[in-house]
Image (cartoon, rainbow, N blue to C red):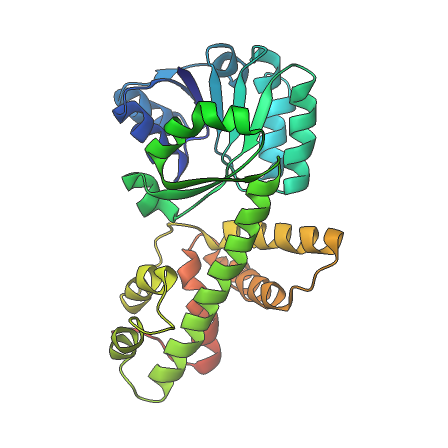
Length: 294
């Protein structure tokens, strides 16, 4: 199976490297030449466009920031649709609007190209060690063809429904992650302001009902004042905007998402949009006039 990979950012680059380690033949394309060079040094072949990558591949993976980037890379000039062969499969692992996933899939179907939407959760650490949670929408037959490949990059790979279902699931995931980070931030700022050691609070509660993967991943970084991005605040804003847009289209309430996106937008306006989303605690710290550090 020849694989094409388009989008070698924080997540895409280690994902591509894991495919190479597993022995897959990989062609790559990205606007960032240094990222391309790094993956080529690991065994990939660089091509000049998304169209060229698609033409050389049985399966094309896209891992891009947002809906417009996916539409441009797939349907735009020099894009995947121009090069993909009938019978090939596009696996879009970007986190985008499920409405756009369905639009792109419908256009590719005219060229006899099948699409799966397969966004991921876990951030850079899990992208590096190949243990991402991968949520897939699309035809079961196409999923069966790529499942083994996806398991190279993911610790869990789940087909959740038709095209667009993967991104609906990712939006649900992002609501819960934002809620967890906001709750953790509120709690640790409260503890610190009340003169209780926040690290001891973390250790005391992590084994109880309040414990979570988010808490274990983010609390140690927050306590160390480390906001190096594993998943940027600006990207979480993008996901929560997709939550709000999708919720509006189906008629569901989103008060928690609305609160979280407001906090994140405030931080982004202060130049903190490239911080890790665990940096949401800075919104609480500013209001409380205290820093949570161990």
